Amino acid sequence: MGKNEERVLRWLKQGCTVKEELESVDAMMKMAKSDAFNLASGFRVGGNRVQTSPSGEAAFVRALEKNESAMEGLMRKKEKLELLKSQLLAAVCSCSDVVGGRILMARYLAGDTWEKIADCMHYSPRQLQRRQEEALKSIDLPPDAVWLR
Image 1: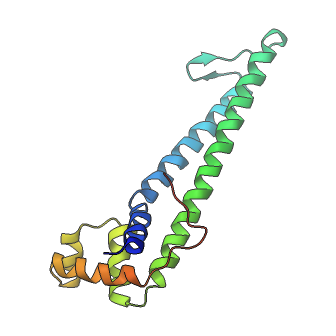
Image 2: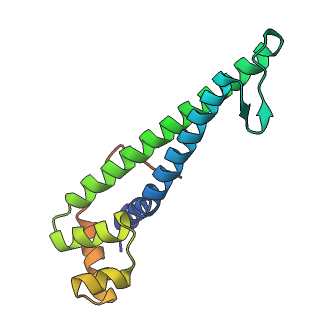
């Protein structure tokens, strides 16, 4: 496998975690929204009661700003994950080998094991890996490829 194929493969492997990371970000965003509501209502946030009286206004504002900052960071991360997901899908769909593209999609976007893919497609795991190597040769990294790490 050449250097370009190795780089494309490293990039594609990020797809294995995108779904889980998006679910995690969504869960954290729900928590942050709940915290913002609780702040506005004067309830506990992170185990601490936030004062909404004039004397506790500064702490309230700091807590609200911290929550807003966390939400902005989560939104940026979600946008990055969504962009990566769309880039991966476009790259796999651009594969000139349809079977190779299906293999890449099952392995790196759906996260299936070699054994499961082999069983579904009636290939041996080794045949799949050879088809993958051929498919990788026909994929070019986008110039603005998103890297999570």
